[in-house]
Image (cartoon, rainbow, N blue to C red; front, side, top):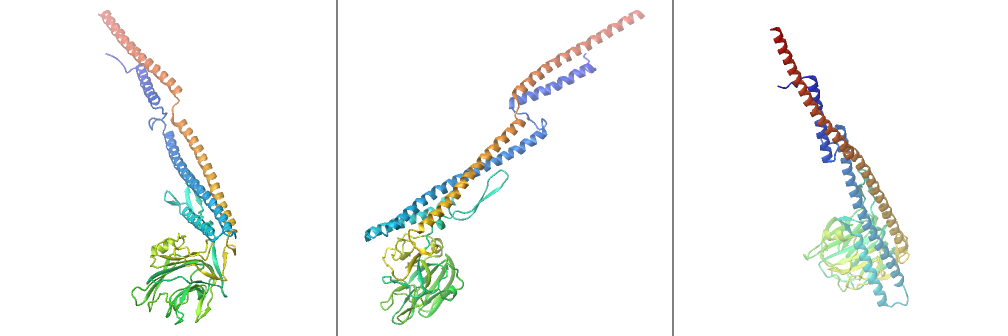
Length: 475
């Protein structure tokens, strides 16, 4: 029989249990490398670690955001560099084109290269990065740090920066242009124009010289309203159309009875109307197609005042989608059903850039850059190069700022990782010492408990023997 309930045995037993618990905790820390292996070890420290780790996750996400933004900005800068090179070549071509020693073939080659470069710049302006437009001109927002702070980036509009704004300017007194070879013999057609600000008068029209009635007349009189006139008078009007707009008119007279007209402004549908007659044939009795004036019997009148930037004529009905998607785009000139295309941003404003060679005969009109109100040509490119330089400077500053953000986030991540490590990770040298100490204490506790049990057992034997002696003496 053993006695374990005395104070010495209980003390030894409690110490042994305590040391065994400490030894197990020490083993757990050494094997896991963590100070906190259960919530009991350090509840406050565990809560702090959870908070710091969540912050670290947000920092990783912010770093990823900034790295993606950096790639986006590098792509923008690379394309802007190409645009700068294109601008320099266009400026060079605009000078070479006006060399009096160049023949018609030379100039045509310059024009073809010039138009091809303009087309390539348009393609640059439509580039996307992972489906996101690089040069839409729309502002963008991105989260730049773990606190959710937002950085707003104003839009980069390459198309606007590269716009030459060249056009034919009409004085409203006696300027006009004729298109003698243009014939529209289709029952379906579309006419599109880009007009400058403060325009007034007849933009484009065709009149029957025998009946002196308008076959077609697009007029911008009456406080800058748009009206389309046919043989019997006004058939389509839209009030309060803004300056600097694109107007598209589709006409369908395929039923042989009347003509259905639809009007669009800046790619958006605005109105439909119907003419009481079916017209639109270039009869031999007609005057030529004309821009910038109307006819009063055989007298030119109602002269146009303002600027025309572009004219397109198609021998089919352009759909809503085609008009909406293309009214701002530069055409190649090879598009199907395009029978007349005059883009006054090119080197030769009178030349038809479609495949039909319907050149305009200009009378008195001036070819100007409407941004500076100076003559169109080489001088315009200094402004474009300044615009592109400013855009590159903006993108460059954003690249530098984004790099700084990434470096700051990486530094914060390093500091957080150090703080987490201090709270969470075990000091192996210290813990190995604790383990050895707890191991010795455990062994000592076991020995002490054994000694305690032995002492208790010997005391019982002594008491027994004393009791026996007392009994024998008494008897």
